Amino acid sequence: MQKFRSLLYPILTFCFLLAMVGFFLGRKSVDGVLLTTQHPLQTEAQSRSLPADLGEKIELNRATLEELMLLPGIGEVRARSILEYREANGPFREAAELMNVSGIGQGTFAKLREYVYVEDNDENSDH
Image 1 (cartoon, rainbow, N blue to C red):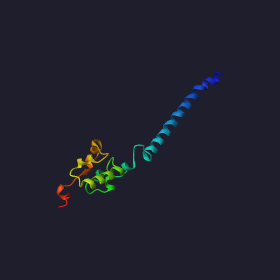
Image 2 (cartoon, rainbow, N blue to C red):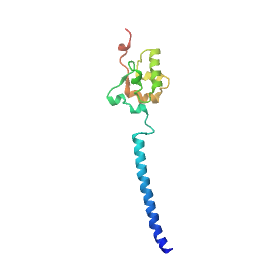
Image 3 (cartoon, one colour):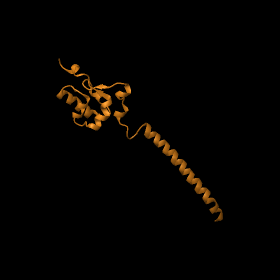
Image 4 (cartoon, rainbow, N blue to C red):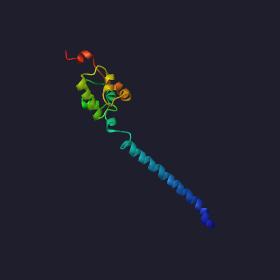
């Protein structure tokens, strides 16, 4: 019994250390997988290049559906809403007019402001 007690603490210590090593090694590999392939916050739109990455801005009156979908917070539904608004109301006179589009409020516009612009009104008129 004395011999068993003298071996008990080293065996328990060894098992504890082995469990800790396994825990930390397993945790490290799981984090790596999540960060490289399945990060929960990364969406398809975020993985595409944004105009600012290219040193460009999107001109709202010429933008296509695909270009609008590159903007942060703009998916296919909001991009279509922007195109429908532009078709119904004519060309945008200023970028802030985006807030008149259904689903785009001040918060969304604040994220978009640096990525969009509107050319002078003279170029957008039919005359």
